[in-house]
Length: 141
Image (tube, rainbow, N blue to C red; front, side):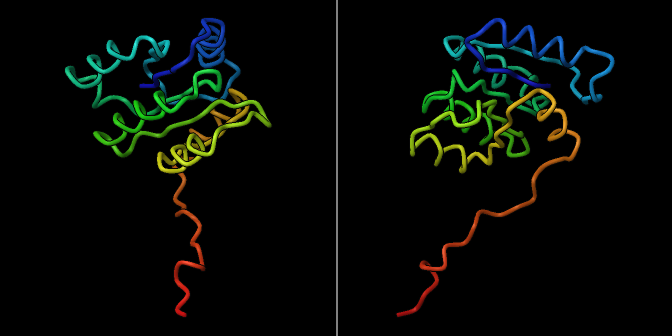
């Protein structure tokens, strides 16, 4: 199951059209739920009080909805299911604050710029990389 957090109904329509198009790369997505961020209480109920949380595999966040609050919701969902993959659909060059970038790194979020990028990322599987080591932290003085 994929949930999409976007404030634009056009984004949701485009995502559903791309996934349902026969020529697009096949995605293993059985259900798509779209929420505006204002619907977070409904989203929490859906995923914590029902069996939908067990089926959740992917969270897609539109860049227009990226904020600390949205990323905290994604973090709380990921804390109950660490295998959830999180993608942030961002325009190239779209500035995130330092705190938003840090939280995206903690989430292990992948930045994509197109629906084809989402398709390719889902097809290749989860990233198995660790965060870069900071040599200064390991230096003995």
